[in-house]
Length: 203
Ligand SMILES: Cc1cc2nc3c(=O)[nH]c(=O)nc-3n(C[C@H](O)[C@H](O)[C@H](O)COP(=O)(O)O)c2cc1C
Image 1 (cartoon, helix red, strand yellow):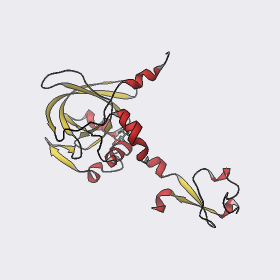
Image 2 (cartoon, helix red, strand yellow):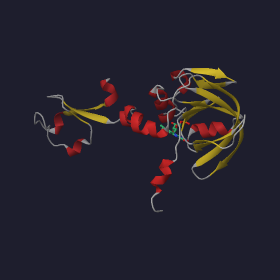
Image 3 (tube, helix red, strand yellow):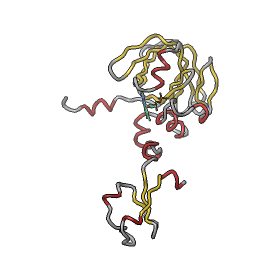
Image 4 (cartoon, protein in one colour):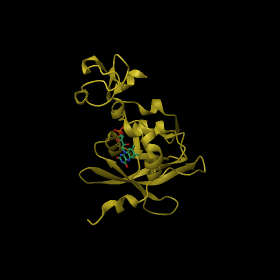
């Protein structure tokens, strides 16, 4: 390929896909037909729990995130799995046609599952819009807006678990492998006087 960066120029939005028992953030969403009940295609990774749920679902919902949507929604739905966290206990939702849609969104679509197509990593699910509502006439969040303006404001949970080392003498903190550090750069004591703490424990 001469330059596959051109692929990143395909514009995508930010959505929460929900099924009856879970859901996740998706940006790989596309409207593939027109009319009153258009078809929408959504690509979901096979190792997402949501993929397993969708295989059993007759309907699913897409909530459209706005530029001002609370970033906690992206963190909870996009960086955690329903296998570990009940996402619906952490984010306010509204019940529509037996599905939970995100209250802090611009609106939602309810889709009837038409079918799916697999490759080795993803499933492309296709749904037909059977219900929809607009909560707010505001700017939707594009994936590139998220990347440029919002991504760095969210702490990835993997990052949060990163260990931080503290100098017990002067309080200097160091968040990389301690073996790289021999002495405290501030007060000069040896690394044996550092203690390790998870960054979360400081909060
Ligand atoms: C900005 C953003 C965009 C994402 N887009 C997709 C996507 O299009 N398809 C997908 O399968 N996962 C996507 N993800 C990842 C899932 O939301 C994430 O893996 C989630 O934790 C899966 O949760 P689950 O195991 O409960 O299904 C995205 C995550 C973020 C933060």
